[in-house]
Every structure is written in C-alpha cells, then in structure tokens.
Image 1 (cartoon, rainbow, N blue to C red):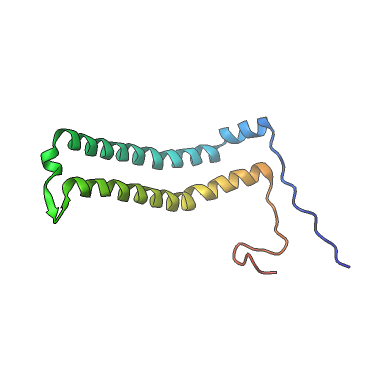
Image 2 (spheres, one colour; image 1 turned 30 degrees about the vertical axis):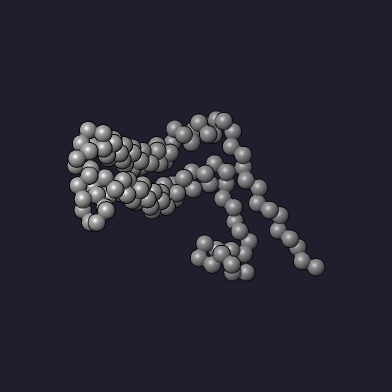
Length: 128
C-alpha cells in the first residue's frame, strides 16, 4: 500500500497582502520594466501606422511608385505593417520570458507560496 501526498494548497492572499505586494520594490521594478518596453514600442508603432495612413491619404503618387512588377510602395508599406506587428509580438514575448515572467513568478510565489512538485523538476518535468 502506498501513501499519496496531499496536493499543495496555495495561500490565498488577502487584500492587504496584495496592496503590500503592489507597493514592494520588486513589483515596482516589474512594472517599470514592463512599461519601459511596451510604451516606447506602442508609440513607435502608432507613429509608423499614422505615417502610413497619412502618406496614403495625402501622397498617393508616392504610394503608387512601382517597385517590382505589380508591387508598389503602398503594397510594400502595408505588408510591412504586418511584419512590424509580428516582430513587436516576437520581441515582447522574448523580453517577457526573460525579464518579466521570472519577476512576476517570484512575486506570485511570495504571495501564494511555492508548490513543491513531488516528482518533477524544471529540468526534467517528466522524470519520476
């Protein structure tokens, strides 16, 4: 007969604990890092999009310049809007995984407690 290990019970933080965590230097650093990455990229992308729209509205002769076959500047700039969106998303995911997620995990674990998986480790999740 084997004994089963009871499941880990996370602590449910109180409102006061959430407020204390929000005021902590660790949370302030997390918020600063997140804003320091997202705000500049958001502003840059909005400016890039508005420039694209304004050029399309007020300088159509520029947008209609043929580059290769039926591809003109307008088509290329429109395509680059999609490319920019995917690049920003990719960059944010890489940044978040490296800079934000470890900090957020540490804050969450300090609030809720750290579960100890009985058979898994981060390096070998399927190891028994």
